[in-house]
Length: 226
Ligand SMILES: *Cc1c(COP(=O)(O)O)cnc(C)c1O
Image (cartoon, rainbow, N blue to C red; front, side, top):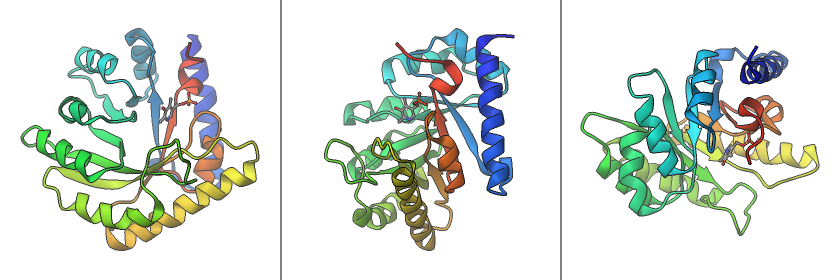
């Protein structure tokens, strides 16, 4: 069996255990394979193993990949930081954008969204108020969400977080719980914004147990990046 298939089956099994533990159906979770810095060949292998959602951070390399897989069933997620001059390419090549944290970005994505397409948007929240990290603050969320929800070509689907690097699982769990409560608050205003993108290779079990609906897994599927 291929190395990737082994990794994927181990990861899927571990995910299944967390879903069972939380009494959740596997339809309530999307698994996003983060393929940044990984070649087309490996994406093909993951696709063959049944993965449909792929996440990319770097626009240049991702556009080549999107082009290569045109006509396939792949759903592309942009999870990198966004500069204004990249909004057109992002709107044209991706299905989901997880890292929107400014209304200006949202407006550009809506403006450049091709005719008839609807771009799925998640608002990134700086859940641990870290100075070096992007994302809106908890207090800003509802205002920016209402504004994005009014833009013509976007579907506001929920929120995304990258918590602070924490040794202690209890501390990390606090960040996830805080995110879950914030998502509930958002859903009281916008019912359809019910997705929570949280959890990576090192912490997806804990994220799933705290209500994540989208896990972004790189190393756990493709192996270490160099
Ligand atoms: C790279 C990256 C991931 C995946 O990280 P792993 O630890 O390899 O699973 C997830 N989310 C974001 C935003 C990333 O940049």
